[in-house]
Length: 582
Ligand code: ADP
Image (tube, rainbow, N blue to C red; front, side):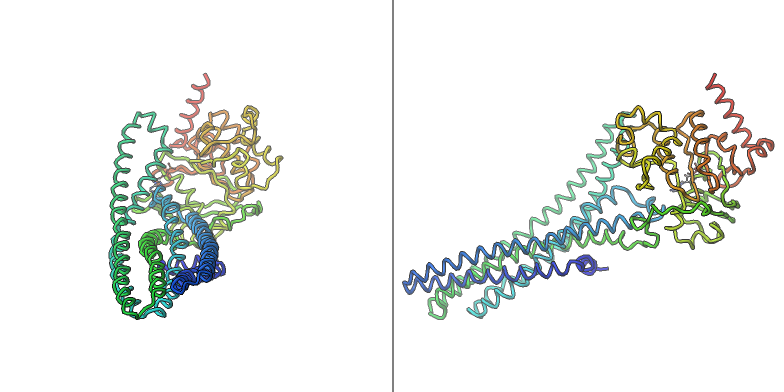
């Protein structure tokens, strides 16, 4: 969609306000016309020596100027407020699109670049939507009305006065094209700088622990310098725009002074008309200057809108943002039956991560997944959640191909504990009830008990209202993990996807939490990935993955009897636990 069409679609809901704003602009321009006319009448009164008339015209002029000021304020409010609303709508749409994207999207895009679109790019579009639209409309109205007045006063002088204007616009147009290129580079640079800041802040612990702060600063300075250079190039170019206008503008005034002077001397134009004409001409200067500036603004906004369109035109079929009604509880009998049939999967341009994977899971059963790092355990859960799409005909939920499912309702049946188990800044209460904000305190306490958080809660001064810091940084890894467990348990889902949820807990705590949460999982389909294989003992079936393929499968006892990889992992773990306890 072109810049114009996209902008129009965002401005459309506010057309009534914009119409009102345009009426105020027209009123401003009409009132402005009164001023030179009163000057003319004033000069004529002076020529006549009628000072009472002069005072009256001066009074009307002052009133018109005051009214014009008020009308201008009203018009600005209409346009600038609308632009702020467009900005809000743009950000909302961008976030909704982002949340609807599958995993590969986030593999491709850098966080900083996405952030820059939410900030710099949205601001550029907002400036055009508000100030830009207002200036363009204002220039059009002022030109039509003022030129009409100038033509009434003297058609030939009008022609002379507007002669330099086409040259001015041509100059600005040429500069605008160059500006477009440079604005794009500046936005790109801002993306890189934001990315570096984001990475530095989130990785500050690693950077400092390795004593790499100095290197990081140097690298950041390079990026910052690059950004500065790009900004300077843009500023140099932008600085050229105003002088082009400022130099060309007075040329018109000079021509008017010369030809107008001759006309007045020859008696073809009255002095009053000449004064009024000059005043009208000067009223054209400012809107023209602003128009030139808006042309450059338009170029910037076009570059930004293109970057926003990249996101806004992404498919939104599985929109999962605020349209999703999380409060609706799926029924327990929603525990789905799952079937993998010859599933092959690889990430973008990568080696196959899962190969010829076959597994049939009856609804309501507990599947344990073991395997070495990188064997594809997390990938399996991501596919089940529809975060990455499997190939068609390979993964069936209750007999329906996952690629044919409405992902929104599919995800409503799922409660997951992702490996990274990220918390959100806010209180413990908000995090625990993230998926079920309407739950009451009794529910909250029961969740905390199941996730073994009660003892900690007694130590925290603010209990459930304790703030967890950004990303839960003020909690220990184990605490964060237990909050993630609690958060997942709050929802009565049919399919639980638990990705190594006990990895930061000691053996005894892990066992306790697991025993406490099991009743809650009864009757649900559960996939439990665990590097601690003893926790998988209760699973109906355990699958041992190796390089994306099933190496072994069976119940805990069967696998121990078989004496393969699983049995080795299990015995090694038992030995380690005994050593730790002794
Ligand atoms: P596990 O959970 O068993 O440790 P994963 O499923 O996380 O294994 O990863 C399996 C393989 O897929 C690894 O080789 C890993 O490098 C690769 N992988 C994981 N996530 C991505 C991704 N987003 N893009 C590309 N490759 C990935």
